[in-house]
Length: 303
Image (tube, rainbow, N blue to C red; front, side):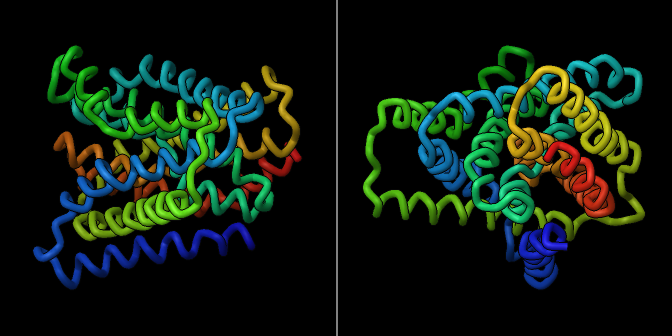
């Protein structure tokens, strides 16, 4: 019950974005919010997250295995995606979005609800790994629908969060102190980014019509996110890691998160069916709520 209650504030801000768009309509320009988030607030959040805890062995290995689980699943998806989708755009959306979970807005508070505040360092660093995957592989699949391979690779490095992440890692590695006043400003920017993301998602949900939901795309994405990825994750964690029970449980939990709202950002930037992408996130979130009780039972097996 505590885990279920922890997601209420998250869905409140999504609902707030939905209501704001319904009331103000053309007075709200969602793309302006997306650009503000993508080019200003999210780089602040990345810098804050990567300088929050010192780099050590535990923080390195948990995100690496998280990325391994996503990489193995992506290979499986590449093997069968071309046989499922007749539309190249739908195939690119499938490959770009299906593995990008809501490890920040939802994963961090859910980790606190299940494991306490000692989970925050691990959920934070895994969230960073998810963001790296998002800003490399995900951007590539979104961009290749409009550009060739060379241009798609170049587009990755036009996103400022990559450079801010590298800068933050250097800052952390050399233990450069951050004044508390500046750290407080970074924290404010990070939480603003999280909140704005939920409002953006809610405003795009206003354009989603139940009758026109892309069910084939949504259900294929949800299968990869909620079935295939957790199965691969459980197998890899059991077979190849010796993490303590809490870290193993956190890793499995983060792999089970529903689709990230950031997927909408990229679909807007690359003009790749943003309304349909928002619809797939809606379907994924609904399935996650239904499966949450069973997910928690699976996670508790590792404790």
